[in-house]
Length: 446
Image (cartoon, rainbow, N blue to C red; front, side, top):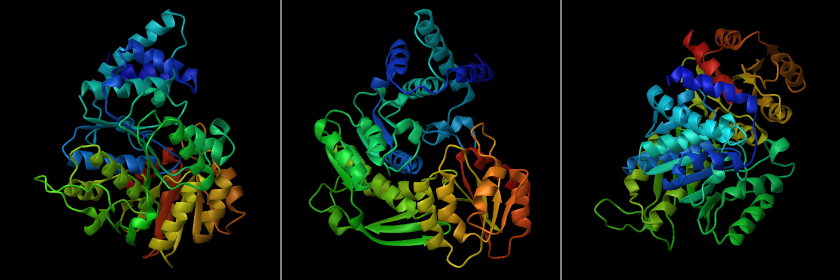
């Protein structure tokens, strides 16, 4: 099988839609030898911050000398980036080889009268097979949607489960209330396996605590009162936080233990934004939990991992003069965090927005939160079948801003924004991750 044949097969499976549940993925992985059970998996769910947290954890483990697989979607700039080993995307040859095996197993299932796996189930199976073939020491596994019924949740005994910020998103699939959504996300918690989480809103926190108690899963909280200071700038940030009192510390190379409480951690991140503070705290707490489990993670690995972590499309500067930033803020929770970042990083600076969203997102709430900070707004239509048209977004945006333009294309919006940008102006393109690649391509043409 060639790479093109592999992608063509995947495209044909999109006809099966999106089906929540574990029956089909379990049947598929059983036919593939249940290779996922041979992997040491850190399973990550949540509404916002999953990608950033996964990137930080993966980089810390890589710095510690581990071979780290990472499965994270959707892709922003190239399809292959959803499968990475130590930061390198899967090769076309490896993709084709793994897909050939997965396709054969799909044939076995349908021949036995079972439903054909969906595209996401096939992609997830391919990830497990690829990481097993690569003999990864760890796999950072991000859920696709929700948790309990997500295809990634067939794993029975992760190293630990991780819950990022939980807010309202995908309500049509996950529930109308925060408690219902949290219940689905908390479905990744497994019997007797630790779960690391941020302090969530009370409605969500109560659900997580109850689930952990029922499954005798140690609940480890990333505590915000450890943070001593935060310094923002458009190119990065520094977070200083206390070590852990009365708990096991990180170790220095050579095996000499250092009391973490007497050693403040000074974390330098190129990932920028107010939301990255909580993401970094969660990744730090996961690293500490792994250290407590006996994994060889030293202080210098943690510091270097944070400094080297990257996550494309998350408040990422892609052009310096004028400064153009892209960010995948696509729901109300992410918009609130982007609002905080704008207030911290760009006080009194004029900002031009380029916005493209999907129709099933709470775009009205995003506009209400963010448009007061804009000098000028361009509405665009993302290249996605679920996209809200630029014209419809334009009509919505006019309720909150007096200077809104519906651009004919993403390229036109970028060109106009740059042409009219003052010396100190910032151009911020945000919304659906699916169109940020278009923005980046348009910027290359400047």
